[in-house]
Image (cartoon, rainbow, N blue to C red; front, top):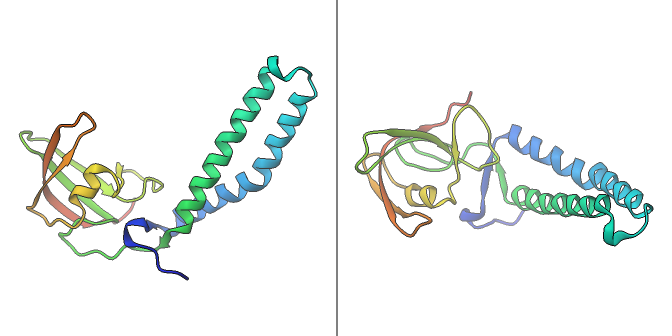
Length: 165
């Protein structure tokens, strides 16, 4: 197995990996067959320029192919298990609590692949906030850019390994 760069690695639980692998297997097998049948059935209805069913099926096919490529990329760079982590240091697989500068409200979330799901909000380590806080320690501040060009500063209040459920 070839080592990938650390920033391309997606840490997944075995459950998330299995779920994504099953989705990929379905889409690249039965999913492709089903959409091909829909396209063929719509094609037989006649004039393709005015055939809404044909165009809808082709659009659905494009979405399926896009998702297949996305899943292949995730699974290709996936590492199963727990990301290496240390108590008090922000990284993938950590439950993080932050406070936005000038605001008393605290926000707690899991820093992990967006493909993970659970009872807690998930922020990607590749998002602007995730990238800014990754590697920081409790008590550190981090600044990141918002989509409108302004910047936001947060303070890391807590970083503990995610315990699940």
